[in-house]
Length: 160
Image (cartoon, rainbow, N blue to C red; front, side):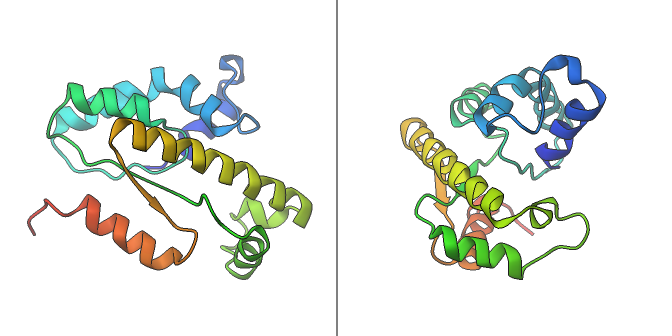
């Protein structure tokens, strides 16, 4: 499940809630938590494994939730705190995902600003993870290896 889809549901379908894609990620996360938390509770109740991805979650919120539901989840945040903006822009341009890749429809200036915002948000997330003893994996150097590390971390206690 991606939190981005839920956020876009608010943006387009429920604009009166003030949750929209132009907010900073921490604002989106704070505003969406009231809605997302019951979804997570249902996921825990169902006993089915889910992977939830997206920037709209904060370490302090998921830490409290995890503490309230011990042993029910693995938590790992990924980000890029020390990325070269020019290199990241080049990577974004080279790895287009087709017409659904909204970022590649923007000009370089917009993308650079977005990358800088995400670096700042990654730093905020990294600090929150350190504060709440949650795993943070930085993708700044080797993206694919870092994603593999995250996958291994999340599934380390699962038996096939």
